[in-house]
Image (cartoon, rainbow, N blue to C red; front, side):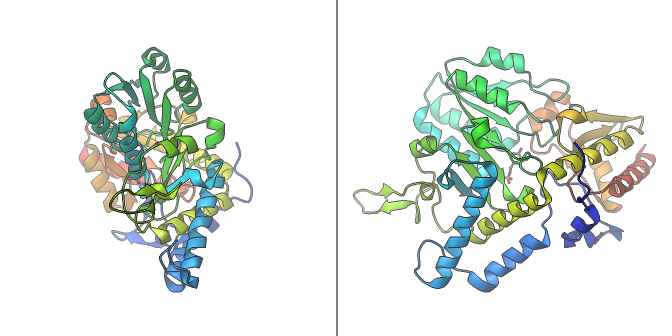
Length: 410
Ligand SMILES: *Cc1c(COP(=O)(O)O)cnc(C)c1O
């Protein structure tokens, strides 16, 4: 893959006002993109435009503002539908984010599970794709099984085949690991799970910023992501579900918007997607989510992937200059632009604190994936995660800061 000639990172950086700020007197180097991405002016403008010009509640009023807001919100749903290639916009539920989406599905499956059923969760998951399933197992008596990972931070696929059986009802896996960047073989996982009649939920929180997933081509049952990791605002995300599955699942929350008729004798629910969107939603967030997806597509995912891969290779090469470095996970060929590492003899937290003083924002800790840290028997890692608006010069600044931190701490 090659970065297109017209990919101009200097120009792209001008879209992100925050990249001009200083931290501790130093230019900000933002390498915590896997936790949240920065917001381009185009999305900020979209948010301002909503509040300045057509802030109103949706689906309720016949007045002009309410209709404009409703149209913009539903337009955003279509943008999301087209981006992920869902068959119908009804299959796109706007949620508060990945965590909310997973809880929505986990809650609904209580109706379909019983003692003896099995739920398979990959060993590479974020806590938000572990805990809701543990809660579901507690309620239903279903058994939670963990698909193991290997030293390279990849899933053990031969073990997957051994673990699948007719009792397997659900399989949960992230498309890309947030802690290590591993790209998981979800196509294969989905196909094998379907052979046993199991449904698959893919957590796309870390793939959505880097690659375009086609839910129909994948034949995935549920797919979810958060807007704030793909240049949108926090508190909004989406859940894709196959129509017949979403229709079968019971509603998650009760309230306004999600009903058809309400009486004290019996309430009937609205159809999709409203059934799962109780209460006044994050209207502005939804509209801005659509704008963010358009923004990413204007840059182009092929460009994003090719450029980020260059950054990943460069950062890996530069980090390997340290003779006490340990990099966790797989080779750059099988991951997105994330590097999780430690220095022998140094605590990740100490390194992170020191480099922050030098303006470098990296994440330190367990990255909401404690089982992965347990696997490597470490308290946490330093994680540098790159975006298409980062540069090699910024990587050089990080390396300089890490060298200083090493000499101060060792
Ligand atoms: C960030 C993240 C989540 C949680 O997303 P929220 O926006 O906090 O709900 C879940 N899974 C993965 C892989 C993530 O990276």
